[in-house]
Image 1 (cartoon, rainbow, N blue to C red):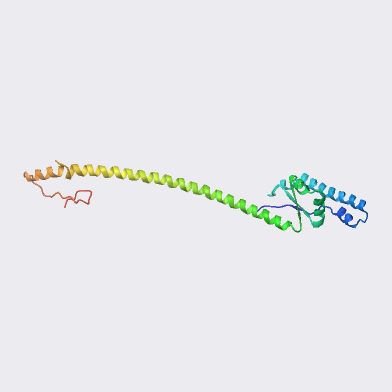
Image 2: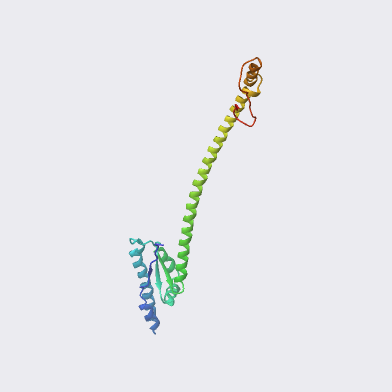
Length: 199
C-alpha cells in the first residue's frame, strides 16, 4: 500500500563478543562500556540519517534498529534501563528476533486502523452530503404540497362560484334555459371531475 518500514541491522556486536570471551573482569567491564557506546553511537547515526525523510518513502518517523542477538540488547538494558526510552526519543525503536515481527504486526494494525478511520471519515462526509440533499428534497416536496394545496383551494373556490354556491353560474344558466333560451346542449357536471363535459 505504498508504505514503508525501515529496519537497520548494521549495529556492531564486536564489543559484545569480546565481552563474552573476556576472562578478566576489568577487561570485560571495558568491553561492556564499549558495547553500550557502540549501540548508542549507532542510534545517533540512524537519527542523523533521517531515513524516513527520503524521497518516495512513506514511512513513520522512526527506524527499527534490529539487534540480532537478544542477550546483546538485554545487556545494554541491564546497565542502562532507560536506554530504550532514550532511543525512542531519537526516533529509533530497538527490536530483537523475538520482538521484530510483533512490532511489524503492531505497525501494520495501526496502519489498518488509520485506513479504516479515513474510510469512516469519507463515509461520514458522503452521508452528510446525502442527508443535506434529502433535506433539500423534503423542502421542495413540502413546497409542492403547498402549491397543490393552493391549487385545491382555488379549485374549490371556483367550483363553489360556478356550481354549488348560492347564486352560482350553473343555476343562473339553467334559469336562462327555463326562461326560454334556445339551446341545443345540456350542461352536465360530474362531482369527481374537474371540468365540464358537453355531450
